[in-house]
Length: 111
Image (cartoon, rainbow, N blue to C red; front, side, top):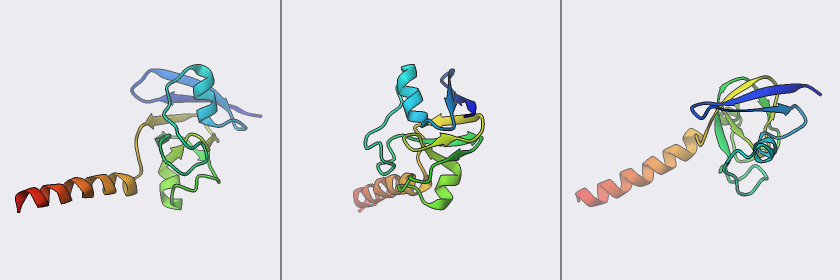
């Protein structure tokens, strides 16, 4: 079992996590307020952008293969190296949906 250091960008929070533990489970044990909901890799509430490092997350069904290269679902992700994560960052597919909703509202307001 290998232990890695995980640094959360902009918060000053750091945890250690083995390659057998999920990042979310270690956050909760350490008292870090990491968002989550379903805990099965679907809802994306626990999403974090991978700034540096690698994770394995084969059960992260809520992410496309491409998104899984740049984002971690902390409820499923297990570190494979030391990490820097930016919590609360969502994949472009989700961000795009949010922006599209706002753009549609703007278009209606202009009519």
